[in-house]
Image 1 (cartoon, one colour):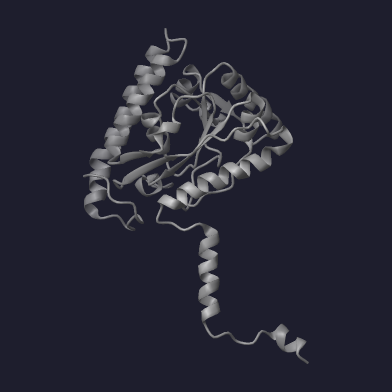
Image 2: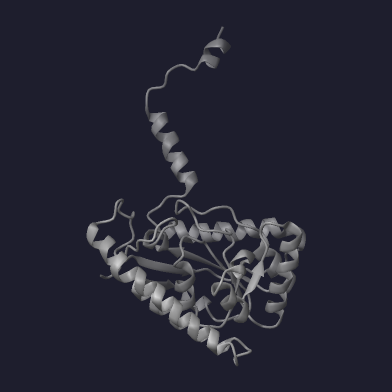
Length: 284
């Protein structure tokens, strides 16, 4: 089944899609993840640079993305030139990570939640492949762990991070943490904003059922950080969020929350309004 044009995910899913997911897609997805993860663990015994492990992860990403039924399109891919920087994207689904590994054509490191590194197998792979843990629950520990990401950037390796800190519950963008801006300013590197569209419909949070979907990755122009100081991390964070939001809603059927509120206000404005009690009181 080829990816469907982006639109709302059916609820409930058609029986054919559910059976295909439970009997074929989900088992193959898990098997492929275990297979490539094992290869990466074996390669880590002699691959001290992480290059071979990253190549295995890229193959894994492309394989499981195909298994999920997604067809990925990259817009403005010329901005994926491998420059050292902090690559950021909105977080919608478990499939975000394999999609990104499958399409980003260069070696990078992921900055991930520290608790993932404590999980069996997954944590071992993250540690041995050189990924960077960050503590998002303890502010002091978070600053210390972000220092590891800064060292990675200064060593000449790009890093990737989901600035929302977790998957979206609704498909709408959440608030961004300022860790990516902190890292970029400290390392003196640009931030490359990216928008993922379609992975929420492919596999939203709290479900194990794939729904084949056309997925788009829109890559924005690099945002230079040399003119920003550490005191301006919030300002830079908001700029990045606004750029990702612009790209996301430009290519999605969803409307930004502000637009939805405006639509509701317009509907209410068009309906006959009863006098408000406070206005009656003011007229006395």
